[in-house]
Image (cartoon, rainbow, N blue to C red; front, side, top):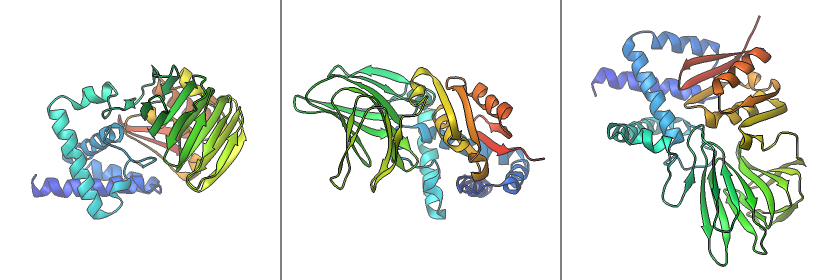
Length: 317
């Protein structure tokens, strides 16, 4: 890599870090556009970096729970190391013609059940239970004569639990959910885990030893410190399994998070825009339509800078 290319890459990394910061405003957006328009090489380097990071975001090597795409590049040294490693990995696999096929197939590490961006899949488990994964999800099943369980490594799962005396355990980063029968959904939400008891009850085991009984038709948000929110089940929860996102008076930030597993790359939204309330029924398998629905029904503009970069902003004036 020449010194000029290295300089452009460093500048592109700085821009990516600013996008990740959560305070990327209109003035910064205009400044970024001016930077990209300085030359075709500026745009090429930035778009290559963005596409490479989008691939890493959806890849089976991205292992930590609830980790924003660019958290690893918040510090200058980490930025260089992360970008260098991720681009090298993407370059090797792309050069071999393997990376795209790996991701399109939703393949994971040994023993994992995995879905790729925009993909939902169903499996019948060894105990007769039925598992469905939302897009960009990773689960490890573990079954023997004395134990039946699922380890949620990323994303959201929905499981129809085959009735047995032995409970099915769903292990997460912040606790374990036990269910003997019924239908439960467990998934990442922000820095916590959302449990929905769609049918039947469940028992939540927290790291400190607390056990919390969760009746049917309830929604529980928890993390390693305990229960953060508890309420009865709201209309439309779990609707992603049918290919739709049913929204009743939710903030746009919540809707955007639900869209992310179906969109390659980065979605940028500021805090004020994220607070706008939303109602609607959005097709998850057609994100172009869903994004257009937002711009038609809300005072927002959806700006598509590339296939890997979407920005949602409030319309003013």
